[in-house]
Length: 292
Image (cartoon, rainbow, N blue to C red; front, side, top):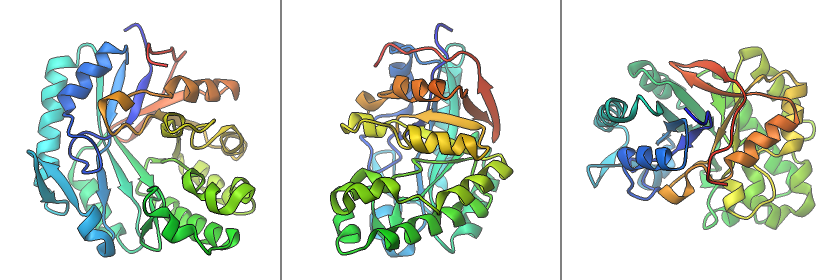
């Protein structure tokens, strides 16, 4: 293969917030732009207070309850078909992005035990049952909240995500920065102080990975999530496994910003990893894909 860049965070049509592009279409696009691998990570959400918003997937073009796991059976069938068609040219990983929610650990564990996933991202998407990842919703959370309350909410939930031991990697570590800067100003960039270090130390002790998520680049931000400062802090706390992912929700998002993500890791003399059957594999000498 002429490149070993692997996009480890891609939402195919099962995710209802993604465009209805199939696994097959993403694989063909990955080959067009010179990726060596693509890891699919449809959403798995469990907040009962958001069931009407987040508790659905798209299955064969129709909405389907997320907790009826027939969709995962179809997901695995489609990945296996793609591996038969493209597996000699493209590493295709079967993953999941879990939106962590307090009290749902038992269900998450049951789902993860029932299917042979390669890679499972744990992410904090919601605080107080409001999606801070969403431009439309985030104002309802951030308005009127002091920086220290946001920090307590976010890092308290992140600590629980790490401590439950169910996930391979933490997704978009500082997601609160995406929209929080509008309400917290410069304070958003120091929100982690005193909170994040103990969490990173626990991640390191567990061998958990940290995703460098490049979705912020296509949204016009200067750095990935996390940026150089928090990636350096993770390294200094002993985290050694780092993946890169575009968080693509449509074909044109695929791999956007990944060259920046890899350059960030290279600047800190850190390697890039992926996962197979939940085991981390570090890649040698990551190269650039044709998409910048």
